[in-house]
Image 1: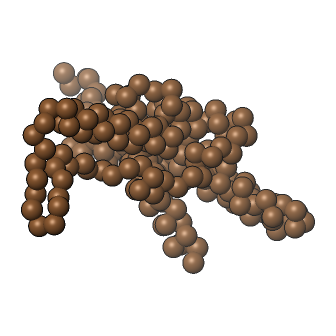
Image 2 (image 1 turned 180 degrees about the horizontal axis):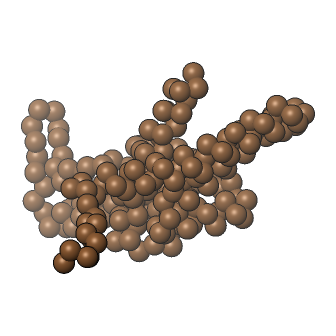
Length: 184
């Protein structure tokens, strides 16, 4: 036993999300920082034509940083394909307001004045269920349009991908806030 080397033990984080966040942040910065420096150098050297297109170039590189930082997700692969095709797309720039997606909750009762009248007829209740299903389906369609590649995903996969996409967007916003705060 004396001649054997002590084995290193790997220490795992108690909070796995912290590891994912740290990995995402490291990959994001490692891709984006050098790219932004190159863009800055080119914009100072080249003429005004490049400066007019600089916003599109930066948006593209920020999206590519997101792709390379969050590999392994279906939305990441779809975003990469979209960027490689050069498709600006309407879904990424379109903003959905809550009223476009429909109401988030639908009550099965109607209010008239201060009294509440409950619906007891089975036909009316079935119509309300159909309306609720229609609202949920419309909201799911809006979510599908927001997630890159969401239109090709099944409902269960879309919900899982939505969770990762939103968390990556939140991390991206935090990183960009830190970057802009440091440069200000």
